[in-house]
Amino acid sequence: MSVSIEGLDNILKNLEAKLGERRTTRVVNKALRSAGEKSQKIVEDATATYIRTGETNETVIASNIKKNPYKSIEIGWGAGSRWRLVHLSEFGYTRYGRYVRPRGTGKLRGAVDEIESTIVPEMQKELKELSQ
Image 1 (cartoon, rainbow, N blue to C red):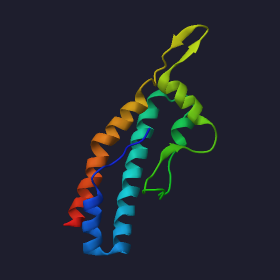
Image 2: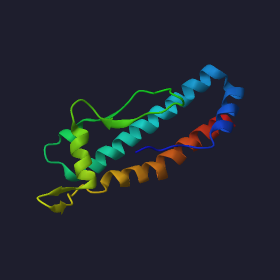
Image 3: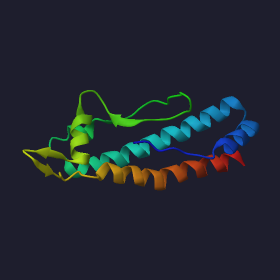
């Protein structure tokens, strides 16, 4: 699952013209880290609805800023194979010929929708204010 932001080219050009390349990089990185922390919290809240041992919820992490081909931050699970269990909880599974729909079905899709609707516009607003 990923969230993409379109139309930031003009904002970033204005920021570079106003602040310079180095300062723009710092501002963009700060905005990305802030968005990553908020996204991590939203995903933790979504996985908290089906806690059994708490390990899945505790291992939610936000990556460092990645630069290929554009800057991004990934939200996922740390060491171990928790993603397999999360996949089963998110989409359900078949057991003995019957489809099982766990309590966590669709919770992460809802988290991604929430991230798209709240954090992405918030980050765009921050960058627009700095570019003017």
